[in-house]
Image (cartoon, rainbow, N blue to C red; front, side, top):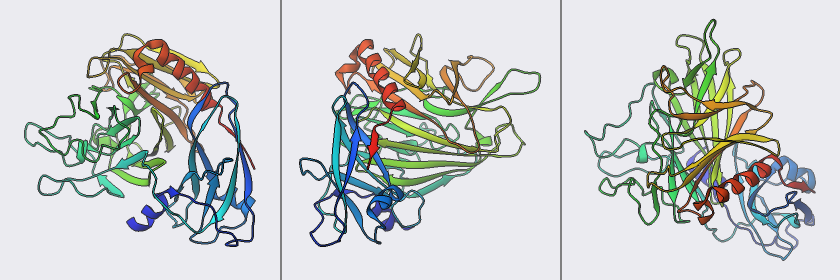
Length: 429
């Protein structure tokens, strides 16, 4: 699909009322309720096209839906083409629910998209031009096996803006090193604006120092950083070996943008020839990462094909500057968190990984010798050829939200997030 078509489906604007008589069918009621005893701000509601058409009938080509709140307020709706077939597959919007609240929306077909919306989520990958500028956001990009990381002693700018894909919302940002390291990092934000199209473009303005927008707040070293991937593989007569998704054995890597705000941003990283054990048959792994407005996490969904028998997928949190991890088991969700003076600004930062309990295969700490994955608290997950594995990675910096200036504030937040992750809102037509 060309850039203009993809942009059309990812561009979302303020939807106004359907025009009377445009379609004979009347608006349908959509009921969404919060099952939790606490507020759920900026809850992401995802409606599949198939679900919508079962209630509204077939949606004509070039048409969309409008969603109207009970107070006759139109909502911002995003339409995403998830399978690149030229038709939108999902309509998504954000809504903030009070404890136990039930809201009834009016949903109808419309052919008009009018106005603009505040962008609350963004993803981008940009290559450096032949001069000191960076090109436009790419829909797709790739690197060969063994792509070296930038040697900043020899060049001031990397081949990719901030060394690889970056994604953000109005609360927090992340990046992935698009090279053999393949590690995820965190942007601490103190602004709701989208900033990652300009951060790193000027080498004289270091993002390692606190600016009015925030800064790079994480040192990752040889760890799994902020939710990077690895695989635990059982070997005959030996302990399980932890193998990083990185290095030359990772093979070529493909980046693909799926959706780009304003409600949510989605991209996929494809690793079609990962030879985790050297000359064995290649593993095919795809990670889909999404982020939406109002949250302090990104969500990862991973599909693995041709994994070694007994292998487990592993993700983790760097522990270079934290003294301990704390387990989480709540609401059908498991994981762990850390909280310490562990930001690069020497202030308080909480990080967490949550995954459905049905996927969790345990947590632990990596050894710091005899392995290429060090300084990491990890979460292991099941691998199924028919299902995706998945987790949410949280970054809660005290300069982003005063709740995170105390461990209790952060822990209360994570406990609620575990319940929220494990207990989705109820959607009834």
